[in-house]
Image (cartoon, rainbow, N blue to C red; front, side, top):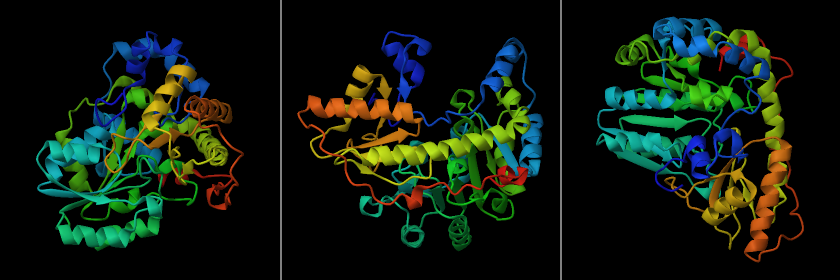
Length: 397
């Protein structure tokens, strides 16, 4: 569980428990999936086509990319698709990061690990718990200037804290750094935002000289196993990355899903609405655990800090061994300690099982839970997603 900066896969964990994944009966609060998408009908269609999907070659990446762009309303010359967004991080590092890169921490580990592995200087900007790990863009820009960083990264929504920077501020940040070699906006979780109707700066990247926006289809669609993502940039940058990628870097399952997306747009939007509802309910329930610090989030996960006297590693192990609840303990994340856990948003019945496990752990360490804590206002976390969306809303993501 602590062998690296990332959690073990669901399959590796199930095998370690002596069970197949389907028999492990785990409630997964670790892997940030969308629990409401794909729909059962989509899974049935994929299952019916599984023999052909596995037996035959996929189309080349250019063909699949054109189909995705037709759905999103983007020009194919501004998009490069990949076998997961981490593949794009690797190629961005190899081709576009020459000497130094600025990264706020804590964040997704590959943004620090990948450039360090290739000998780049990584300028880490520490986010503060006192600020709920929110990123102050003006301070970050001053840090970038003081360090002389040539590439800047901004993860929006940030993982693991769930903070979101409004679109207008992200654009201002990009325009302040036009002289840098590259500005990367990682929007892997931005579809889960409900604080703003059109939060993505993807279309804006296509007309800027040094901006790249990353997207993760696996996270949005709840299909991590497929490994597919894409980047948006001006044609020069997108073309440079696209030419470096293998011609057949996408598998047939990814192709099948890309060609299904358009028919299930409304189902996808409904899944985001349901997840936003679940996030508010889960936030409220976690606030009732005495001593627990719960950080506001616009992602499909919530960061918590356990009370004094609790230990994150022990609680993680207790939850998985005694309750079949798999959580992400953050002690191996730069800028975090074992007192922090990232919990994926799940339906209310699963949250009750999680909190029952927390209560059980508290009793085990002789720290009985007291009366429920008083709830602060939930106004900031209530969904403001419009009741209906046009197809352009998805394209703008």
